[in-house]
Amino acid sequence: MNNLITFNARLRDRLSLSWLTPSEAAIWDQIQQFDAPPHRVINIYGAEGTGKTFLAWVMEREKYASYSVWGGKLTPTLPRLIVDDAPSEKTSSREFRPMVERLGIKQIILLTRARVDERAMPAFELKVDNQDLEAFGANLFRHLHLTMPEGSFRNYKSVVNILAR
Image 1 (cartoon, rainbow, N blue to C red):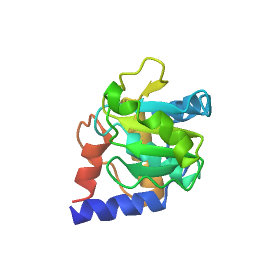
Image 2 (image 1 turned 135 degrees about the horizontal axis):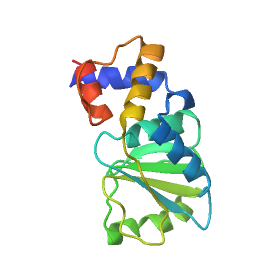
Image 3 (image 1 turned 90 degrees about the horizontal axis):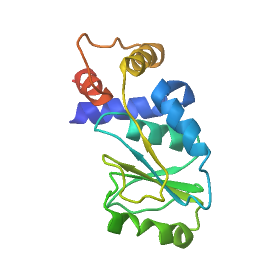
Image 4 (image 1 turned 135 degrees about the vertical axis):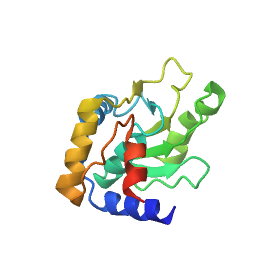
């Protein structure tokens, strides 16, 4: 576990927009179109290991949004707040709208595994394909001098877990 924490810290220290895979870059472009009211809460969702947290770290590094995890203290220092592992049920997600005004921010970006059950909320699904994995491998080598492990991978988490050993 300590190796994974160390690896993630090393990764976060070097992040920039150049790290984004094609799918992450597409989501980044799309969410900027929903930058403010009336879209006070938006949703990025996808299966485990598809890059939601990674994209959030890049957004924080680029000073676009503050990053936090659901259940922790929500203290935004930037105009937008990312809430990772947010609940996707309609009743829970509705709690976020009033938080925008209460926290004095422009927007909250919810990261969830399933799409939030709120039809009016803009939602963007993040998936990983072979092109994304190739881009991720190239970035690992370019920025961290690491080679992508051999094997067939469905997501980034499986790659990172092997590299962090």
